Image (cartoon, rainbow, N blue to C red; front, side, top):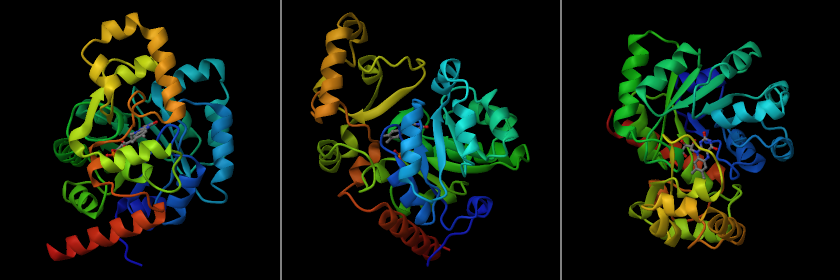
Amino acid sequence: MVTIPTRLTKFFDIQHPIISAPMALAAGGALAGAVSRAGGLGLLGGAYAVDDWIETQWREAGNADIGCGFITWKLKQALVEQPDLLDQVLARKPKALFLSFDDPHPLSNTIRDAGVPLVVQVQTLRDAKRAMDCGADVIVAQGAEGGGHGERRATMTIVPEVADEVARTNSNAILCAAGGIADGRGLAAALMLGAEGVVMGSRLWASEEAIVHPAMLEAAITATGDDTIRSSVMDIARTLEWPDRYTARVLKNAFTERWHDDLDGLIANAEAESTRWKQAWVDGEVTTANTFVGEATGMISGVRPAANLIEETVMQASALLKRYA
Ligand SMILES: Cc1cc2nc3c(=O)[nH]c(=O)nc-3n(C[C@H](O)[C@H](O)[C@H](O)COP(=O)(O)O)c2cc1C
């Protein structure tokens, strides 16, 4: 088996420096389990912290060694109603707990006290410094090319900038890159930028194991990277209170065309538009509900088994790294 050993693979005792993104609703137990069994680190998309979803999906992963991701601000809110939620997940001894979006404090203390490796995804250098202060074992520098929520910085610059900061502060933190990495070219590039591994979202979203409506997969296969947009209209439609700094990358459609530049108008029509969007999501009606996928959609040509994607990515990266050695 071709492997690319890095500090990430050593730290987690895995074969490949690839983490599957904890994608809300899409990254269930089947995907997380498949990625871990293929030698990467598979994560559940615990996202909006719905307790029984996590439990069911953990069972779906079988005996695979998986971790779990949460949206930090949402987990903080959820803990008010369900104070045991994080402890219950930590009691499962996840391979890693992944936090993204908002200050990881004080959750970071609880996670570290439980002896569970902490992965923090960041969108700015400032947040990377804060993640190091929180004692994150792994920092993921996320570029705006990525699918789902994120911010403004590009992968190409945020990764080396954070790599320099990690080196300067002599942190033991291990850096990973996220945003636009969909094959071996992306993995090799991320390693050259100073990362020791990657988080892959969009490409694994289009895998046989992910939980995605077939019409959305079809839309992503047909789309190119030109067809995506970062917007907040989906969060208004879903009545989710995302902090203003974060937008999500999705495929443009009639809904974003209508409302992206008229958020006040959307808010004024929120009830009807929200009902319409949510029904379209269930129906896979992609001109109204948005397909959550990044610019890497232009590199998605079909739905494949996750293990296959991981293996091919590593083989391609390994060949490229040798060629330019
Ligand atoms: C469908 C989808 C859902 C996502 N949901 C989450 C999430 O719930 N929590 C999170 O931390 N990141 C989430 N992300 C972002 C990923 O963590 C990651 O940064 C991103 O997918 C990397 O870029 P890529 O999509 O180009 O691979 C999501 C991404 C996608 C595509």
